[in-house]
Length: 223
Image 1 (spheres, rainbow, N blue to C red):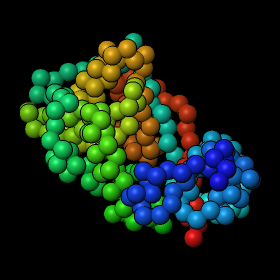
Image 2: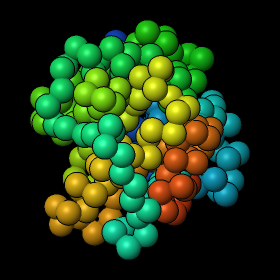
Image 3: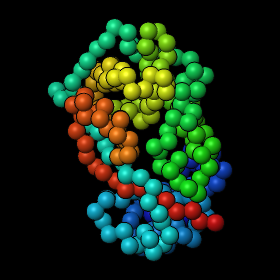
């Protein structure tokens, strides 16, 4: 296997029960190799590139990701005494919030993949972050209402329980986590979100985040 063109993603393979791959280059050689390799393939490309090669080799569109980013000078921090964060949280409660919370994700939107397996993929990711103590619990009046998982300065996985959504609370929790990360020598905080997730996009914009690096995500399933 030419690792310069295609690489395995074993964490996804565990959830979906098949080989999973990510293309590292948008070229005819990489696409040809993918179609000769069984499993599920992902490629991320600039939205403005010519997509004809992707369609020629059987790749289909799944999502567009964008990257919110913000530094300490731009962050519009806001606090509320009933909205707190803590790295002490109950694993089972966090997993209950996580399960089924990522309908905007590209794996849930891929018609070739099981929604149950897609849920498992995010559940497994949260477990890994919890084991590494890289998760903040989001509390409202001392009750766990959501979580934000992070890696270095990246907010990599976050969800709020359904009953707390749409109430204007997320800005308090996100402010707290961003301030914690920025206080720990991070020059900026960033994330990656689906362009279809308007609620989260509005949240980041309201906190002073800017947006960059859009990427179209294409998948292909090879038997």
